[in-house]
Image (cartoon, rainbow, N blue to C red; front, side, top):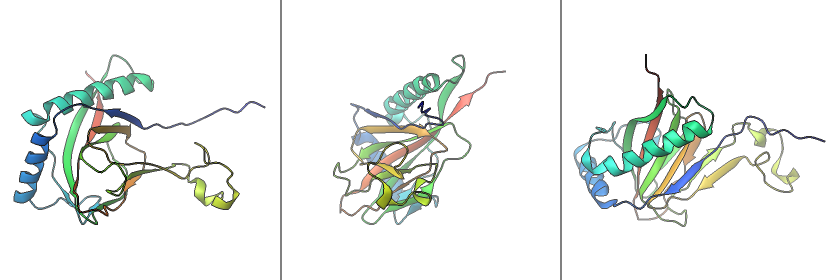
Length: 196
């Protein structure tokens, strides 16, 4: 029997060796001067859209643009078009802070870069939901092995220096931070730029 894998998705992960401290300092200063924007975050704090020309973020933004363009090509989008960072914001989730399930509208790729996080996952994993809603159709007690087809979710722990990128339509949420250590991240969206 031939089995064809159809309608696949992906999560790309890369570890970056860049200095996070200046970005952390900027984020905490911004947090001390501004109320949180209410989007998917609960208990924690989220900034508005950052100025993409901020100097301390340029090494990170450059890496995001390089990764976005590579993924753009890898998933079969037109190679003569650019996939570029369009919006970015920072998040501080202190103890009990979490993000409800959401997707990023009006974007092509989205992602998170962890400026500060605890590898154990106690800081709150990012969890991606299987878009095919498997858990409504196949009960857990019927599954021998979790695979790309039978898993209802996939999670990754927050680790400082970890860059995650995924299709913007992939629903995800962030578990509550159960530690006294802030989880600090930068989230972002990219778009395909069509030149006329």
